[in-house]
Amino acid sequence: MGTHEHHQMSGHEHTGHGTTSWAMAARATLHCLTGCAIGEVLGMVIGTAAGFHNAGTVVLSIVLAFIFGYALTMRGVIKSGLTLAAAVEVALAADTVSIAVMEIIGNTVMIAIPGAMDAQLDQWLFWGSLALSLALAFVVTTPVNRWMISRGLGHAVVHGHH
Image: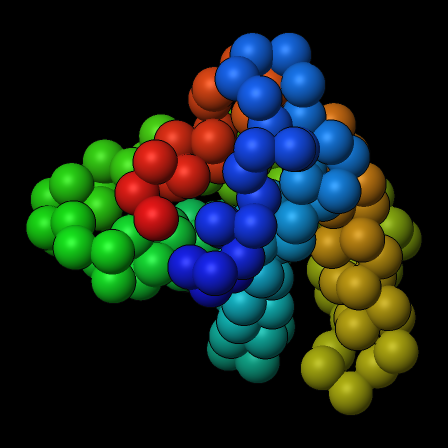
């Protein structure tokens, strides 16, 4: 999410504690999902292509989801003038819960779908399961983000830096 989008996500949609629109929560979740999806897909592709055990593939996906999720937030706040250390703090405060919820949901879905973790990169089961896992992660995480933003937590932390 670019700087101009963060500016648009103020005033009418978030008035401090308690009032946060679903649209704002969805945009914050989509921002988080972008980083998570990059890491999750990359981790699943690398793990599957390299023949990792399912546990290794899941761990790699989770680690990369956090790295890419934090990196996207840090990119935006560094552009606003924060130092790298300050940007890391903002990213940790803004994204940790959201990424964690997404990863719990996404990986649980992948593990729960019979054969998904054993499917190969050229099989629709792999890609369909991965797409479903990301979609469900978005649906479950949006209300979490709405609740957090309404209390000045999570993605609301980023707003003060744009």
